[in-house]
Length: 142
Image 1 (cartoon, one colour):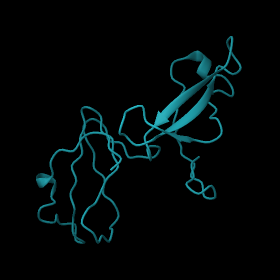
Image 2 (image 1 turned 180 degrees about the vertical axis):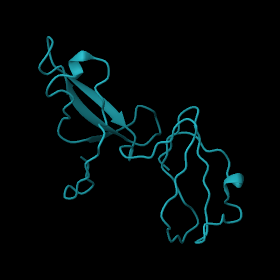
Image 3 (image 1 turned 45 degrees about the vertical axis):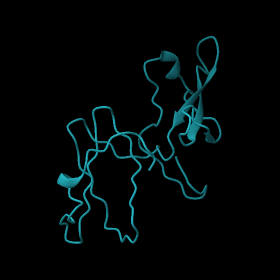
Image 4 (image 1 turned 120 degrees about the vertical axis):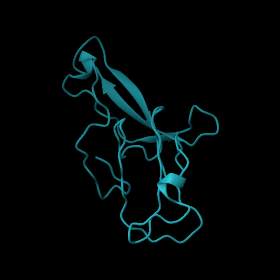
């Protein structure tokens, strides 16, 4: 589950941390997250803070228990994903007044994003069509 205010929660259908191939991570009460998520400095100088989540492993099996730290980029829990062959996402209409729009994205090494801004009728705005958008790739928060 996740919440931004501690009052309203969303429950997601898929696990954010999957057990993987290690047998000791498939045992009862494993992959239980510790209380809270910490915002800690990135190990990469000049980059934004990252979110740290601590999870138990080997709790009921094996010789001992471990606490593993996972890190996520800010606002990286919920996202859209496209297969290698590509995909398309269309947002709801938004009313925008300003000089800049920003996106929070993360591509794979083989992937990229192209953005198009359309008018209310779904026609590309001159200067902002898919054909005019340079290839965007990387992992910036903005």
